[in-house]
Amino acid sequence: MRAIQIVQPGAAEVLQLCERPMPVAGAGEVLIKVHAAGINRPDVLQRKGLYNPPAGASDLPGLEVAGEIVDGDLDYTTFDLGDAVCALVQGGGYAEYVVAPIEQVLPVPKGWSMLEAATIPENYFTVWSNVWDRARLAAGETLLVQGGSSGIGVTAIQLASALGHRVFATAGSDDKVAACVKLGAERGINYRSEDFGAVVKTLTDGRGVDVILDMVGGDYLPREIDCLADDGRIGLIATLGGSKATVDMGQVLRRRLTISGSTLRPRSPAFKGAIARQLLEKVWPLLATRKLQPVIYEVFPLEQAAAAHALMESSQHVGKIMLQVI
Image (tube, rainbow, N blue to C red; front, side, top):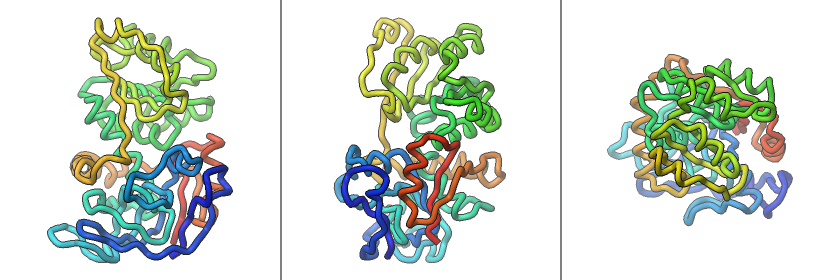
């Protein structure tokens, strides 16, 4: 099969087309013929040598795909050969075939194309796990999304808005701020020209927000604590702004604040399967009615994965960058 390999850690051009043996599905796994795959920040980190795959995972990049089941352990499942599915994988998505644990496989939402469905797994699994499971966003509560124009950001904005929450989002340009508002944010905040904490405090009459989805870390963390409501929660999913921060623990104690961090990739299929079941029950109906929409910025053929990575690193995009495999 054709695949994209990382020949050595480095810049985007180290992604090169190669031929690899087709993977073989084991017990509890399915083999998917990949039609499309998503590009994600962890892929970029892996390419640079900063984020190694978990033990036993493919060395090929790619964490989410959509395609058709062509082989695998389908006993005691609701799937059949030929079914159109999307899946979260630990690696190997930049290829014509990939193996996925059956727990991490979901049907393509009604009315969605394969390309559209491939935008779903990494972002929706991550957002649901961190905003609803870990940060416990509840009815009537508010959400601040840092990096609202990213794939994670557009997912969080749309999903929280569709579920009736007030959503605020930061982005790095006026055009991206406008995109966040169009997706459902009540207010977009240009972090280059505005103080997001001051804006949030004004919008909430001084109370602050209940939950913050943070992919920045670093010096954002103390500012986020200042704009949290009492009993507020921060869900940290990346540290693009640095891994170290100075935190006023007095505020954390007095105001009963929670700072939670997580990475999804190393977690077990059973853990991810529990998220998949929640998504199927609570999110898939919204996808089927198009209350939630794919946001695709640009699509590249598989052999142009290096160009796709270069675009992601430019941060010009709003939403998803995708690979078309078939």
